[in-house]
Length: 118
Length: 112
Image 1 (cartoon, rainbow over the protein chains, first blue to last red):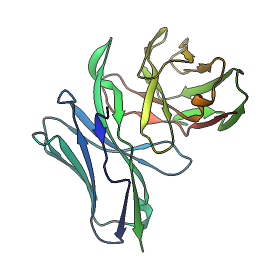
Image 2 (image 1 turned 30 degrees about the vertical axis):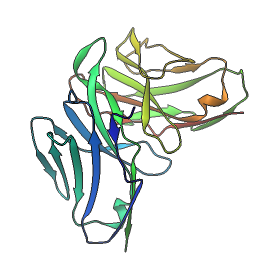
Image 3 (image 1 turned 90 degrees about the vertical axis):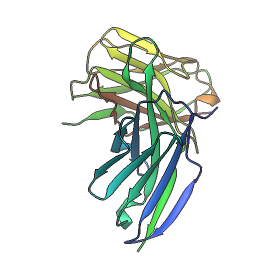
């Protein structure tokens, strides 16, 4: 069963407009959520994160919103730029089985491919 | 800082062969991880390590082995390669107490 779901495989947006990428999760024990960006033939790069005790985190053009009651988070990119075209992965942090702590095992969604058209 | 480096970038193996995927990081991170990504899927954790000499299984460990003799290196060993192990393999590392993981560029492995 998928604990982290990104239901939109792709999204196309015009340059300058807002991009909204969505992510749903099922495990209420997740305590930290992250967004990663991935270009072809490269590893994922960390973009932005949010703790489960917050409902919003902003970093420049990127804002992540968390709705715990709905088990839903979203990434807003404003304004979108052609260089933002990539696959975006949502990930949730779960406790490593034997060592505890809030970090470690990241559970990834399948990703959403964002295309920003000039 | 080179960050997380992985070698090789690409490899084709025949069924039953063995190989080691290399991973190194120069950020002095205690925690290191191996993930695999199958086409159209998210990354899945194979093995992780919380420090030199300490390793443990993740979600999909079957067919793999790891060792961690130094803080910097975390090789992944494939024994008796099978077509189901065709995937892209990513190594990652993080500071203790931090959820943000830093990824290498990946190794694309094909088993035929």
